[in-house]
Length: 639
Ligand code: GLA
Image 1 (cartoon, protein in one colour):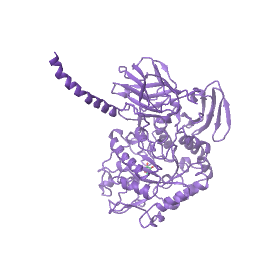
Image 2: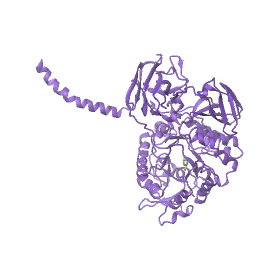
Image 3: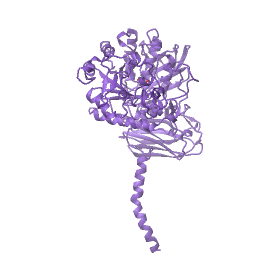
Image 4: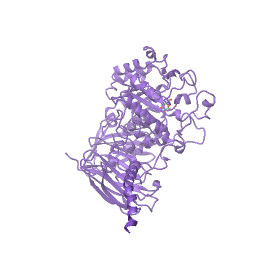
């Protein structure tokens, strides 16, 4: 016997370190393993949504120094600068060529006369002027070799000139040099990185076939998330992140991702930049506002301090948002503020009427947008014609916006439950346009005109006096792994026709991936959170095989009731729910299947910085297995 055992023992002993190494390696590659950290982007300077102005909506590529500095001057003179509008961003249209000998970018000297004062083409005199005004300066580039205007403009007047290579002014192949040039040499503080270079220059595109531009295999496909090469796009942003960190030792920079909701960026943009576009371009049309708003409105858990959803710049000043449409202009501003969208003005401010300047200067609404808690509003009521958005502020007070999307007036019933306030204590609403106060108990009726957004600050008694529902503080909850295995277009985003394509073709398709993502107070597919027949008005809905990171701002206890959501179509697989505190396992549920009642989980999180909520299953099709962190709440704050 002994002789037989001996030879077995050696290999077993020798295997131990190997097994350990394998376990460690698995932990490192297991996306559900706790990390004890907040993984969304916090580099750069965007603890609150950036505010400022961009040249694109007002001028397109027809830009010059006088136009840009003129708008900057109005920002200072009107008092908007003092209210937080700070970034003065040059969009597409500034470059005339890239020097073939050393890759240096050349600015259009006829449009930016100060760029020639230093010998080599330079924006330094421009950024010096902007900085001297107490403002910050932003620049534009593209992930590919060429920009969006080069791809889509029918008129070459404002586009780069010279050979094919000289006209390649995008970042592709030049990331390190260009980022150094923009930030270290020219002194910019912000960069918007567009994606047309990775989208519009396929070998079969007209401008490539004509020899105007070189082909670059498209990896971004706005119409089809499955045709996009997500890792290829992420790889470029990884390089850009590294170059930004290298060239901004003081950390004073902002990175704006502009891939318009393509390549499922709504799920991962938060890991790579300070703001990430959730949709294609806004136009000055009401229908387009609905599309852009919708592309971000159900992504409340994907926006946080440092990593904001960006439904595009404000179009206040033109078309449906001009001075003859103050209701629409106020709605646009109120909604963008509630979404924690960047507040980037897009009008020629030199001639913007006072009535519109007053709208974008509403200090109370700006304060909602800039609230330090960074909680994007959540949808407390959602229908195609009317929505109620509620935003929890750092003070514990709330804001509410009642948005009439439709054509007729609506009498909206706003109640304490929408606000997660007690229905037996007075609730005071302060109208942020008229400053009028009204007080009610439990429920009140509010008339909302067509296209109007009524917006109020709210004072009441919170349902959880000693704590906070996680769904009240989406800015502190990050779906690090949301369980989505095959991104699908969100069918609830309003499909407006695009101004640039008219009504050619067969119509607009659902296009922005995001369907099935994590949600506050809703399942990933918009159903009520419910486990074994018990509904949860508050909670987080997410798919199985997911990991949520939760910043703990000094609370002592986390409590929740977990289970497979009744809306799950997978009735076989069990899901185990785990709570970690700074990487340590604190609580585990049984393996719970569909139809089993929710199990209460609770853990002491005193002193814990990052709580992680993991829902693990052997199921592979997570999309069939929504799970519910019912009534998930932190409580017992230390004084
Ligand atoms: C894209 C972007 C716009 C703007 C233009 C410039 O369309 O989405 O915001 O930057 O390119 O060409």
